[in-house]
Picture (cartoon, helix red, strand yellow):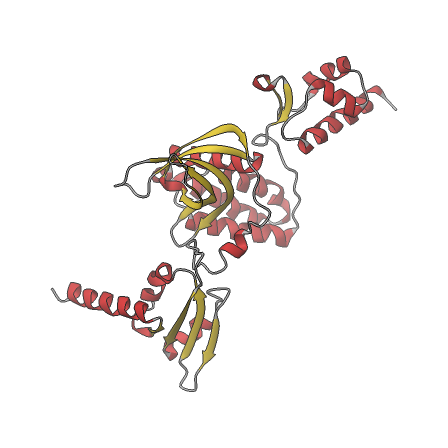
Length: 329
């Protein structure tokens, strides 16, 4: 076996070790695990890839910089088409500039040039759309997203400064990021995790990233509880609003003109539909917070009638009265 091959093999072994130990390893620990002398490990340092660094503040441990680590992924044609569709959805639903998304699309477009030039061209166009609009530039949002992504990947606690809306004061929290969730309806991004307020109140909380003013990583680590499942948590939500209470049964009556369009899509995981003899359709689902679906219901105008729950009917009745007043002034 050549010396060059042995060294390349050892470098790969070191990288694998560091991926398995995100807390980092000292040169002595790496030498012991790879079966070489500590001085030999030191000689490998100039040849290590750029995503491996030495954390001087943590006793000279060698660590993987996950934000710089390149992941090798190969897609077939249909998988690439799925990425294109996801990219179009991302472009249309996110209203903040994300250079990482644009870069990812361009990297995917390059190898597709010969296999599927039309798809490759549109992936590049989607990247250009993300880059193009100066109104989408938001350095604060990008910094928040990057820090929360790093915190989530490395299991690091953060300090978060968040406000409920622009008119309320900023509050500080210690935060453990459990999940990041895009919200197409609100053109926004949300973090779900455990929060601790300055008063010591601890609870699962969802933060809209656009309302976070600053995120600072700490050296403290956290573990996501094994019973935390975001897919179960959000199953009853219309979008992002979940509840610990029993979901509310929502029952809607769509007229025949809307019934066909309703049947074309699955609007909620718990939905049930019943087509009636006159062509109208009963739509039912169990929703955690029906207020979140009100804009969708209103969007159907007179083609839908709320049958249940009663308080939702009353809200729609009052809203229709106010709309009538607006248009008859």
